[in-house]
Image (cartoon, rainbow, N blue to C red; front, side, top):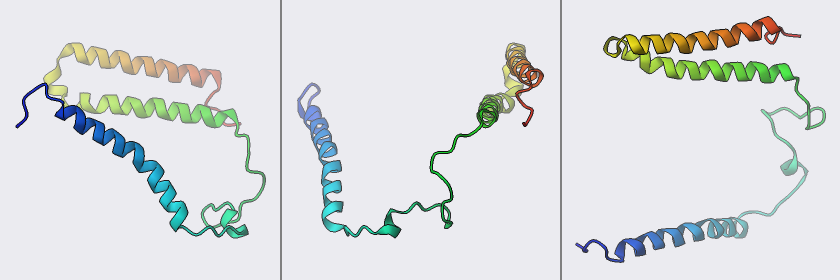
Length: 123
């Protein structure tokens, strides 16, 4: 057993850092040396679910997609916050019930605002 304050801990840490820094370049070099360098038209073609790609690779999406994605993320996070609260509901108390009611009311107000502004209307 080494006494506290000895340099052995630092040497072990230094060894891990050196091994970590050498691992990536060594594995990339090994893959280039051992792998096949055969590049043909099929190898460079885009592959997506077994079908041939059609059209240009850069396609602009409508803003409506982003609004739906953002609303999904917001309500998904709400579910993550509600689950532990629902599991421990009996042990929490009135203060937590009021806090969760305020939290749900804020999200509901945001949803009502988005609905009133027409953000949820598919055009």
